[in-house]
Length: 259
Image (cartoon, rainbow, N blue to C red; front, side, top):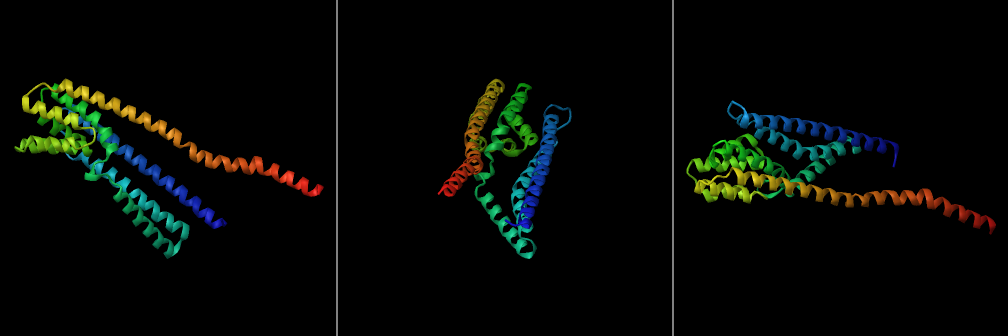
């Protein structure tokens, strides 16, 4: 590999790291702002800040969706350069965008985001129900303040039920989120029969949080096993080149000189 190619590759890696750090910082800041707005909307004296958390979630989703195509475009332009590099970068960006759209979860629900939001949504619903709100009012308020896939389904269910929609269809959309069926059934039963739901919803939130912790531990253990493959691929050639190859070369040189 020539010197200019190595320089371009290093430039691409540095720029990609900088873009990733910037995107992570922006996403973290938006997440903190959304959390403050959600807490203020639920527990503060003022009404819920409508649209704020949803807008922050959409901004984060846009940053995540366009980070890959932008990196591919930048890599093509820096590595190749000129009009050919720009053309190759555009083609690579289109390919990355197509691949991400193809592998996006169906119905616009991100399973990781839903898994992260469900325990928090359960805690907020339990707090609203314990304060005297009904299941429909609690779902609408928590949904408008929470945002994201779980918040949007909660707000939609609450608004549809308030307008006289079918309870089974309204709560069924919430149950369509992975892991939210128990929460939807509990809210539907409480709205239909008037039974207290604060304690069951709180138990469901604790169970969802424990399940998420177990899944995170399983993913961490699986990652610890999978990380040994690239480490081995990097270590074995280095060991052969540094430890074995000099010995073999020395023995071969000795045998040839002796012969």
